[in-house]
Image (cartoon, rainbow, N blue to C red):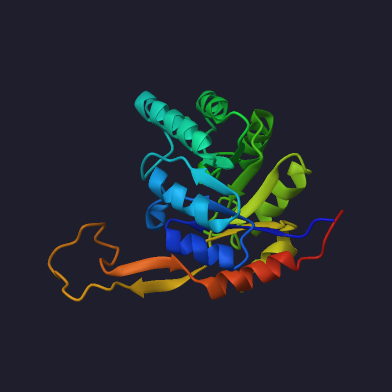
Length: 253
């Protein structure tokens, strides 16, 4: 009998600990979650892997922006996959697209070959493809274990109908994991409308104010749209509320 499964999306040691204390079954570790996530540092991975006690999958994404990669970027991703494989990661989270908006099978195959026996999740490059059902079949044929998706909408609730179709079409061949905008307040509705039982959330409620006392108001080190002194972290209480709902979903055989 299988209940629901919840993955915590985290980009810091503090967030990883909060998600694990809150009941995460697995972590997706990244950096720079506020811009969609990029590959984390080996140092962060080592800390999280040492301290959290749940499987850790690592995001492989060399930069912010689209999923059309140069040969140099593909080589960089291959090296990162091998690095995290050797460090003990349970899986990798990856993806690449062609200019025409289809999954780049050649690039994904190269990355999966570097991954060896690690689990592979297809990340939300899936949500940027021109045909989600075609992309699902491609991902399944490639041997991906999981697809992380919002149903090609702004969040998983808005994409519920596509998620339902994907879950039905997957038919157990590949796991459909609902992500983006997943909160304790909408998990039951997403599940009821889609049948999806695997969820991905950062468990954030709002930013934590920086401990800086002196603040240089005229200089920004990041994107102008992101507050310089706001630190986004997983909220343990919110994550626990999500996990309790997911783990309480009616089991199925």
